[in-house]
Amino acid sequence: MRLAAALACLAFAGAAVAADEDKDLELIPRSDRPASAETAPPPSDNANQRVYVENALSFGSLRQGLLVPFPTPLPLRWEERLFADARKEWSPAAGALFVYSGRLNVLDEEGSGFLHRRNVTHDLREGYASFEPRTREYVDIGRINLKSGVALGFNPTDFFKARAVVDPLTSDPRALREDRLGTVMIRGQRVEEGGSLSVAYAPGVNRPAPIAADPDRSFSPLFARTNGTDRLLVKASARLGDGMAPEALLLREKGRVKVGANVTESVGQSTVVYLEWAGGRQRGIIDEALAFGRQVGTIPAAAPDVISQGGQERFRSQAAVGASYTTESKITFNLEYHYNEAGFSRADWNRWFTVGKGLDASSPIARELWLLRAYASDRQEPLQRHGVFLRMDWVDFLVPKLELTGFALADARDGSTLLQLSADYARSDTWSFGVLATATTGGKRSNFGSLPQASSILFKATRYF
Image (cartoon, rainbow, N blue to C red):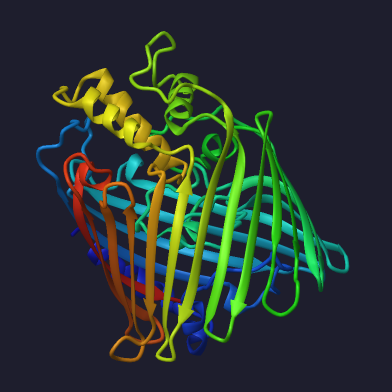
């Protein structure tokens, strides 16, 4: 496409400023395993920084005969994205660190012209200053991607994940944790050998924005997505013996309190078992979505509820329990069970399909029905109440420097599944190439089988500096 030629120009222009070609492989993000308790910020070095340019071309196929018609605009059938991505750190003095992480995107997509305002955007993932006023004590101020949780497919304790993902290139939850917008906050941390304590306060600086993407976002920091409300988070962790690392969390947001816990334990040399849980008073996801739609003006205030879970606010739980196993041939498997008490029950799904069946795509009722699902996706919450997640990561698959990664997320109620498989090959110290395929399977009245996009495939070429 039209961006492909620009990739080569940007790549070779950047080569002039590459400081150390021998260390380029260190800049390629590596796979991770379930993390234990929060630790001190790492020192600034090349291994913690990266700069690269990537061209990604994707094609998608749409599902025909949806029972509940999908409102316009439909998912794109093709898109090409050229972007420059950087994470840099500067340490001007002992005990001080400045961090920037962001991405400059140029889009070319179905139905739009080339190089106009909507197609040139900048995502400011992080921009903050970190200070160490006393040994093992840290203060961070700015936009920070604060991550929590030990699971890979769903993180109930990752309280800052909501609304943080924009224009994703993948459905892999592990990748989305890294490639998302941070939240403006001030965070204090105390780290000891036996554990850590941190407190983070994120102020509400903008009224929450609607879910629909802002067509004129351009270089907007999108604070209305990440800082639409005041939040206070307290985290405490401990290390018990060699293998167990529990963590407790408490979040206060909009007058509600949520609590959470993470526990990991090593079982031998190759296996890690883990549990992640969070709970607090809330309504079902349908009622939360309808209330949000009225708050931001997407749904008229006087409009009746298309469907409801009763509107009752009560204590509800979310959980992810799983295990990770790594073979001698460098294959890592993760198997998890996910539970979301606020998600759709069997009766909720029946109502969703019954109310929406046979509607016109322009119907306000159809738009409200799909808003419920968009709300869950925007908050990175599973719509299904019970789910099973299996992930595989194979380093040096068949040949050195070829990594194969795949996952399957199944709705335990109806068996419908989201599947993704990717292969990435490091051709040299500075170039890598990859392909990523995604598909959804299931019947017309199933969770994933009722989505408008049936499959997609993405090709990418990356130049590291």
